Structures are given as C-alpha cells and as structure tokens.
Length: 232
Image (cartoon, rainbow, N blue to C red; front, side, top):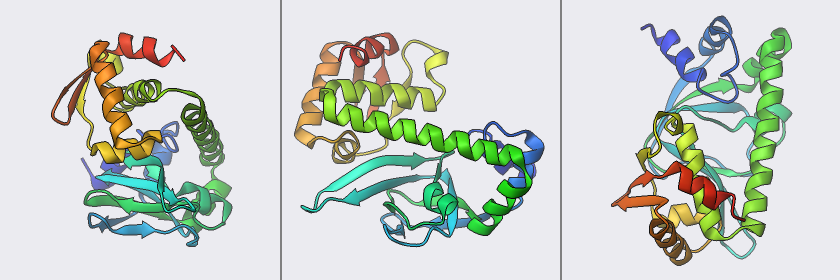
C-alpha cells in the first residue's frame, strides 16, 4: 500500500475526514507532513497560535488545562486515528488547551493555510469540518454534564462504552477487551475525580459484572455497562 493511500485510510477513520470520499482523502493526505514527539513533550500550550491541525498515527496525547488552584483538568485523550488541535486552526484563534504527549507520538500535521484552502475549494471538506465541530461540541457538553450531574461509576461506564465504540469492538461481541492505556491518575483526570474515588468506582463496576480487570486490561460487558450508564 502506497504511503498516501495508507494515510488516507487512517483519515477515513477520523471524525473530521471519515465521511469524505477516498479521492478527497487522498488529496488531504498529500498535504500532510510527518512529525514525532517524545513522551512528556508539550506539543502546544494554551494561548499558542493555532498554526496546524494534528492527526495521531501512533501514541496518545492529553488535552488539558490548569485550573486557578493548580489542578489539571483533562478534556480528552487523542489516540491513534484521532484529530486534535482543530479549533484554533479553524477559527484562527489561540490554542484553548495544552497538548502533552503521554507516550512517544507519531503524528501527521496539516498547516492552517492548507486546511483553509481545502475548505474553500472543496465543499465536502467544509461540510465535514462543520459536522466535526458540531460533534465535538456535543461531546464536550455531554462530558461537562456527566462531571456535574452523574456519579463516578456512571461516568466510568460511559467512558468504557465510548472506548468500545471507538475501537469498533462493541459490534464484535458482548464482551470486548482492551488495554486502558493509562494510569488510574490519568483516568481520574478524564472523568473529573480523584484516583481513590475512581478506584472505588472501578470496584463497583467489577462487582456489578460490568468490567473485569487484569492489570491494565479490561474486559467489558457491554449490556451491563449500558444499564449502568443509563441509570443516572
């Protein structure tokens, strides 16, 4: 498989470019440039200019901000096949969060000028960008609602269901399994709780038969997770 075709296939799995035709994704792939980041490296900081958008090929990136009292508030992780840094790149404003490489990260970048050119010349790319931003807004709204209103075990149940869906495991069986890929501290940042409370909530999910943990690996019972997620 040619490199451009391979990257176009990765683009096809993203929320931003997934709805585009293969011919359009090949055009986008031709505009991308490869880059790498070390574990712990700051990819960009809040307030930086949004000069490019990123596609994660390998690794994981934390998107977060610091609160006024020094706490880290984590919005999400961008994993392989996901795009990040799109907001500032699309609206021309400053970065709204910090992006930190949690592992060694291999990524592809698309310069703001090239993205703008694609949007201006290809209505399908413009429509994909609008749809993506609407999806991101809904996702952020749901996360804020969950942290404000729902118990931690409900937040965790929803987190695991999203992971199942993103990895296309939910449709392949009732008990998908995967590595969480992060520490309990990192998981706690994502669901807006302390590590101790997350550990207690994980124990509740295990008692309910919704998950089974072996080290960092989790086996999910999708049906039971769905019942817990809907119980709030």
